[in-house]
Length: 318
Image (cartoon, rainbow, N blue to C red; front, side, top):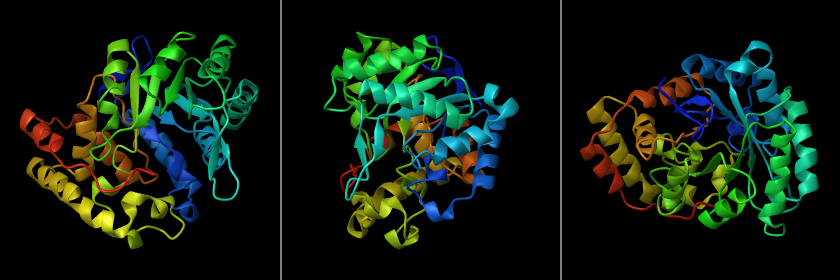
């Protein structure tokens, strides 16, 4: 796979990474298969998919344990391992809540390292900014992890330009992770241009629209009963029907290019910048290979223009 870097001066990584959340959490949790997921993580490294992304909240906690076991022994040195802090389990209707207190960050990095079975992570990310804690205080605690050798670099997730600037005043920002896909383009307005200018890696999560852009779902009934996507506005039946026009357009281009819809959707994301490194999630060997092959698909100006012109989706993200 062709490579880029995790920001200017960062380690070399394959341009397509692997998001591991769905292996234990949110998407079809009753269909968890640790043996298959372990094989997917290790096969990813063989394909050049070296950026492996997890978080302490995924599970909670079980995702880091799975990733740590999969990367045990010789696999760890082949991976650029990323995890996150800043979300904790909620109660009642609150699935998760934010916790950016410095003492929580300091405690959590040690717990993540224990679960991951490593003495450091290559990227430690603030999952969400806690509005009750100044970002400078939270970011300072993440910077302490770098000083202590527990993290090589630190990054942010789902932030605006002003929050990035405030963090940069404390410690360099290596990456910004946020949703970016053919049906979620908010970051193209300000955040992505700023990260590109600053040499910060941009890590799009859900670059396949949580599987929808790959043409895998035409009805909410196609999703497992305990799948988190059933609660999301864009996966309600009326929205799915309206958004099918986007999927159909992507499929038409894919047919013309002899590619899959997923590959076209990922190639569009990759075309948004040199330091744009999507992290599609999968726990299926077939989809892993499909996603990795998108790095070799080149969209010409006409293809990109056609995709750029697709309508906005129906429904909010959450």
